[in-house]
Image 1: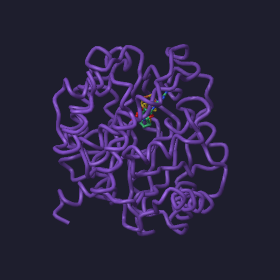
Image 2 (image 1 turned 30 degrees about the horizontal axis):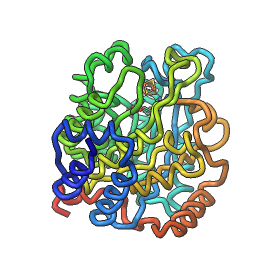
Image 3 (image 1 turned 90 degrees about the vertical axis):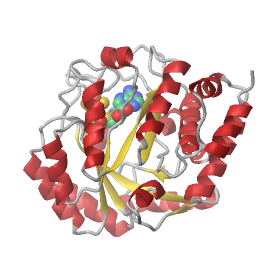
Length: 350
Ligand code: SAH
Ligand code: SF4
């Protein structure tokens, strides 16, 4: 059966049944129809503007052992780094001067940075008048609170998958329950809260993905990032099959249809699978954020979540100009607002 009636229902009402989602995911004959619907909803609710956010990968040290990730602690072949606070702040300053309105700091999950250090970095970066997004994994309520009080605005913590068995199999010594608790804490603390999925993981299915998307809808996140799984060397999944780009684009489009006002990045993993068209395809199927890494030199090469991670070996300002040009070609433009999602602004009554 064609999934068109479910796509139409989603475009009109932003809801459908679990059955409808599963049908759309399994139907490979109507992908363009789905992408066009998501593109219309994107243009209606968040316009032709794209938020450009600068990503600094501040450390690749990680204490966790997620099966899919090249930064997992058991990967002893990876040289580990921690940027100095001065390096992070000066990189952020360059980005702010170049026009980026948001600085995203990401790292493996560890205590390589002490909380005092993180708080100091946040304080310094806030002086440049930018918004700050953090993505340091699972932390305690008190830690999230401390970062927020220093001026952090947003937090990204993907749920990856909501399937208990799959989550457990891929995340030793971690729990879905705690991950959800962290997301709830972030929301309570007033963060603009982002989550997301890793799609095409070995052991996943259309049914699991449909449930994952329903979870995202129910939790009403402000931002959602969806990336295809890419097998990483020196991990237990190194010989597994990669997720399909089409599946990631479909999940991206479904997310836009379910949550029309949120921010959705065109993820680096999508771009890695198709360096020429991936980013554009994601922007034409619901995405409205680009988060290029501006981590420089040797650090950038060592932040190896998966191999051949797409990267631009250009200066922070050149990367800005490159996207300005690229977006003009497809009729979009870089947003000059602070990068909040329409959804978050409405929640705040802004
Ligand atoms: N340590 C933090 C942030 C860094 S990891 C955390 O785990 O939340 C950021 C994201 O990289 C993860 O959420 C995961 O979805 C993605 N990732 C890790 N390994 C990947 C792989 N092999 N393929 C695609 N994405 C991957
Ligand atoms: Fe560490 Fe995050 Fe990779 Fe898991 S996904 S191993 S927490 S960096």
